[in-house]
Length: 315
Image 1: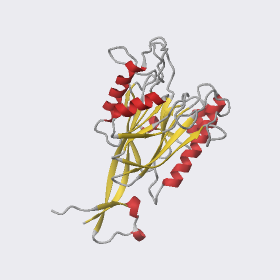
Image 2: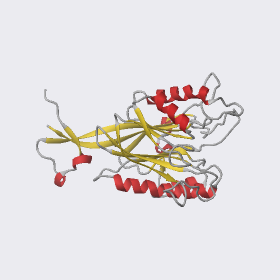
Image 3: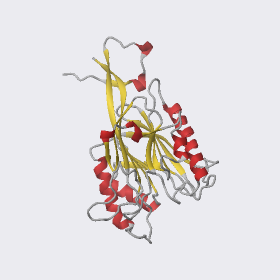
Image 4: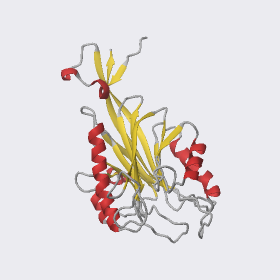
C-alpha cells in the first residue's frame, strides 16, 4: 500500500484557498511540554536546609528525566544557572539535548544563565537572542532600580516534522527593584509581540511562550503589566481546575530550604496568544521527597500544551 505524502501548510500555504483534486487536508496535533525551574545557583556555603550542588545535582537530573521522557517535543528553561552548572546539565541530559543562552554579566560565560534546552532531533534552532532587562537591552546592563543584571533568553525554533515555528523565552526578574520588575514586564510584552509578528506565517500564529522566575506574585503590578490586554496570558488560567496538578492550591513555587518559608507563586509560564493552542494540564511539582533533601529552593512549573498544524496530503 502506498503511503500518502504530506507537507505542512505552514510551508506551502493554500493556492487561492483551493486544494487540487488529488490532495486532502489533514490536521496534525503536536503536544509540547514546557518546564521552567530555578535550580538554585551552586554555592560553597549552603544555608540552613540547603545541600551542596553535588548532592542536589542528581535529584535535579532525575526530575528532568522523568518529566521529559517519552515527550520528544519537551522544552525546558532554567534560572540561576552558573556556567559550571550549565556544563553539568549538558553532561547529564546527554547529546540528545542542546541549549541556548549566555551569562548575564558579560554576554558570554560570566554570571548566571537563563538557558533554554531542546532536543535537536525534534526542533531546529533558527535564531536566538539575549536581551538585558534595562534601558539598553542590547548590551550587558542593569536596568532601572535593579540590584543585578537581568536577562531574557529567546529561542526561535522550528518543529522539524510539521515545519511550524515556535518561540520560547526564559527570564529571571530582579528580586529588589520594583520599578525594574514593572518595566521588565512591559519590555517583555513588546519583545513577545515582535517575535510573534516576525515569525508567524500565513494564517499560522507562532506560539510564543515565556517561562521564568519573575519574583512577583499575581497581585504585583509587574504581573498585571505582563497580563495586560494585548500582552500575555498566564497558562495556569487557561487550564481547567481538574487538570491542575501538584502544589497548586497553596500558591507557592518558592519554598526556600525550610518547611516554614512562604515565598508565594513567583515562577510562571505565560503565552502570548492562545490562537491555535489548547492547554491540557498545568502543574507545580515537588522539590523534596521522602529523603527530605531539597533539589532546589524553587518548585518547577510545567504546562502541557498542544498546537495544530494543517497539512496537505496526496490522496
